[in-house]
Image (tube, rainbow, N blue to C red; front, side, top):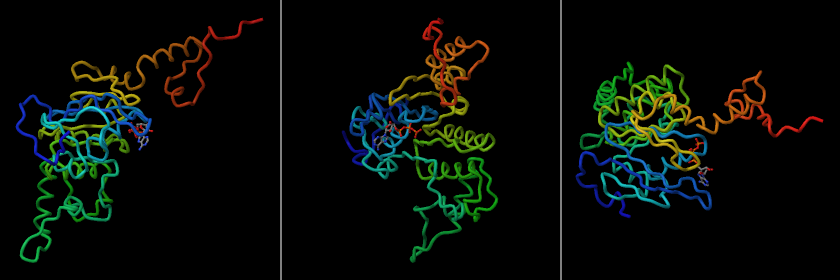
Length: 298
Ligand SMILES: Nc1ncnc2c1ncn2[C@@H]1O[C@H](COP(=O)(O)OP(=O)(O)OP(=O)(O)O)[C@@H](O)[C@H]1O
C-alpha cells in the first residue's frame, strides 16, 4: 500500500472516481466497526452516507481523512492505491473534512477564521496581509452566494448555517477536491439547513466530490446523487438517485422490512391502537406480545 504523500496520483480517465473504497474494514480490537465497505466518490456528485448510531459513519470519516488507517481492503485516489498516515497527508491530497464542531474560533473574525493557520504575509518583515485576506475572503464567500456584510464580525455571532458555509468555503479555497461533511445539518433548523443544502449543491456544481454524512433521508434526497446506507458497519444499500425514491430511502433508513414487520405485528396485537414504530424503536413503549405468543385462556 503506497502512501498518498509519496506521489501525487497520475492522470485518471474521466470516469475514474476521485476516491474509491473497496472492501474496506476497520477493527478496534475485536469490534468490527466497518466490514467490506465499498464506495465511489465522483467529481461533481454528492455521495450521501446514511446510518444510525453506531453504523460506522465516524469510522469511515476517520479513515478517509487520515485519522485512522483501515485494517482491510483498499482505498484509491484517482485510481492509485493509497492510505493517509495523517490528516495532513489527506489534506495534501485534496481531501478536506468539515466536522460538526467546525474547527472555527468563535471569538475571531470571519476573515481570520477563513485563513486560520494559512495566513497570507507580505513584505520583507512578513507582516500579515490583512487587506489581501479580507478581499479574498469576501470574494470567495460571494462566489458561493454567501453574503456577510461585516467580515470583522466574530464568527460566534453568525448563524449555524453561515458558520457551516464559511468552513466549507474555506476548505474549497484551500484546494479540496473531495469534501467530507459530517452531519452539517444535524443541529440546524429547517431554514438554516436550507442554506447549507444550497451550498452543498454549489460545491458539487463547482466540481467537487462531496461526501455528505447524515441521519436525515429528506436532506440526503434533496441533494444526493447516490446513497449508501451503513448498518452495523456494513453497506446495506448502495443506489443511485434514479433507482430510489425518497419514500424508499426513508423506509430503508428507518429499518426497512424489520420495522414494517414490527409495525404489522403491533397493529395485529391491538387493532384499536396503532403504535408508531418510532415509539417502539426509541423504547417509549414496549412491544406487545404477538397474538400467537399469548397464554391460552382457561
Ligand atoms: N476507538 C474505538 N474503540 C472501540 N470501538 C469503537 C471505537 N470507535 C468506534 N467504535 C465502535 O465502532 C462502531 C461504529 O462506531 P462509529 O462511531 O463509527 O459509528 P457512527 O455511525 O459514527 O455512530 P454515531 O452516529 O453514534 O456517531 C460502534 O460499535 C463503536 O462503538
